[in-house]
Amino acid sequence: MPAILLSIALALFGALTLAAVLQHGYVGIFLHQFQNLAGLQVLADLGISLTLVLVWLWRDARARGRNPWPWVVLSLAAGSFGPLVYLLWGRRDRTGSTSPAAAD
Image (tube, rainbow, N blue to C red):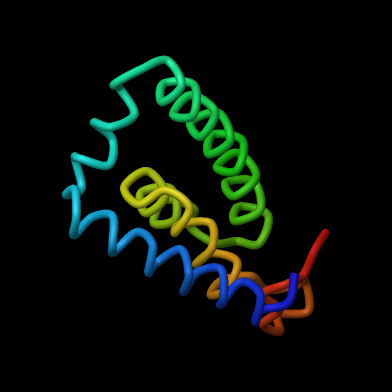
């Protein structure tokens, strides 16, 4: 995925997250998901998705000789920001050149 698309996604998601946090607070974002089964379903789906992404991220970071823990902690604290920043900031292909959009 081209870096420009990742950058746009990060910027738009960041703006949406900022607006939500300002309106509801960090904890409030999660509390709304516990109000009914639809919210719980979305929260469960996001949890499953983030777990799958973290498994990929962990393996990718280790294969590239990088420490995966900062990205895991960022992902657990801030959700999709972790993988988005990982893709933008840390991907290196096997030749050592920076390649945010490199796919294996």
